[in-house]
Length: 399
Length: 154
Image (cartoon, rainbow over all chains, first blue to last red; front, side, top):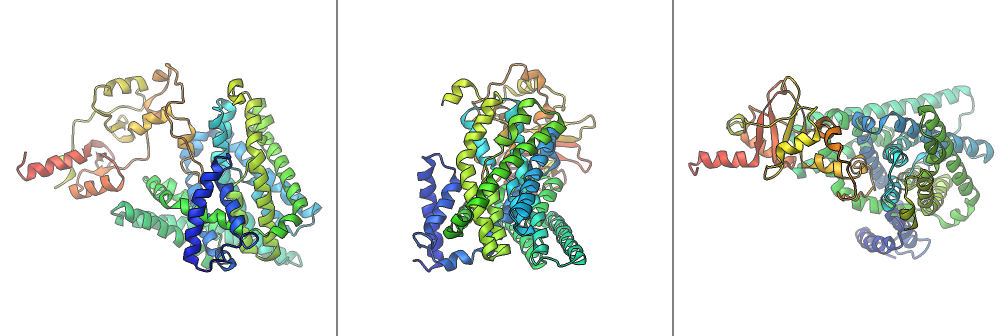
């Protein structure tokens, strides 16, 4: 077993690089490759990297999810909403909220899970996988109204998912000890409300401060240091004040995208360093999995998969009905939205570190198991929906 | 030395209603596509068109849509779409212009202009007055020319 942190990092990066090359040949998404590598390296299997290294990674997951939230916040600009249109926005909202409600209610009432666990699992159910969806539409040269709507939805729905998760985690944090009476519940709600409001305020203040001081940037290197510095300032302040890292970083990104004319340069600069951080993030997610827990949560995992599928199909159906979309969109959009990956895992990893203990392991195990299944079956279902909607031609389908 | 001393004042500009076909025919004989400013009736700069804006028309729509979404790898191929001939008239400048652009003031120093070009990785920048009206365009070569002239080389 390797005890050195520096050597552990080196091995993770190099193995991550070659492993993703190898597994790409099998047409498995890169993120799944990183998770499998994490499972292989963990104390559960080959025990190559010390447990101490994986356990000390809580702060790192916060930084990376802050980065993901910041990037997705950029998508919440008036320009994006104008580009995707009202119909797509409408469907993306219902297709994110309804799975959240479905999973939360059934996990709470039927499976008797604590309310805060049900809430977090519900929020994780909202996330999708834009990368896989885009890959499927590109591979089969899918074209048409259904494809356009689908791509519009997956371009913004992970941002909704992250907002829902941020809200749920704030609520969950307040309910974790379980109030004994009505006054206690009221107090919990008030606490969550302050956490959410505070996070929004923090993100907005950081963005305004960012705009105020950015004239001191002289070079592209300055810009990267400045942007990364402000992102850490935002995430760090959120941690210090017990606010939501996700919500504050996302609002930081959104306010920046809507108020700064050259905001795209700042978002682009972070993209230069995000690849190794994301690699490490997903390897850690895989390594954090407790394999014994994996077996014990099979019923919950199955329930999560079914409820999420039901939530996505009915959510997309209702949304499509409200905005008056075509019959094909009403029928098949929910199915096309089934793949799930990066954001769901990121949320589960943060939930694990926030909640801790056996409940934290439960959230992560269910999410990883469900994600692996959604990643294997999801792309095939997305393709099927595109074929049924008539957006993939017969000859492309044969490929 | 200020930007107004080095900038090009004769600038070809278009309106937001200019069709794609007209736009392409105006610039077809240029060595390379210059920065095209888009102005409104009061000469205020409202957008810019560059090669990237035109390439976006040949790329799948998702290239632009997913640029901010983590983990998405977009194939930036530009030969997969089959644009219809009617696009020439149906698409107008407003549909393709970039409204998020960097500008420089006429009174800014040449050093500032150079810094801005480097920082934003641009070849040229539009020059505007305090009200945002377009006055000219400044590029790396304008600065180089001015410096050579200053030293008596040209």
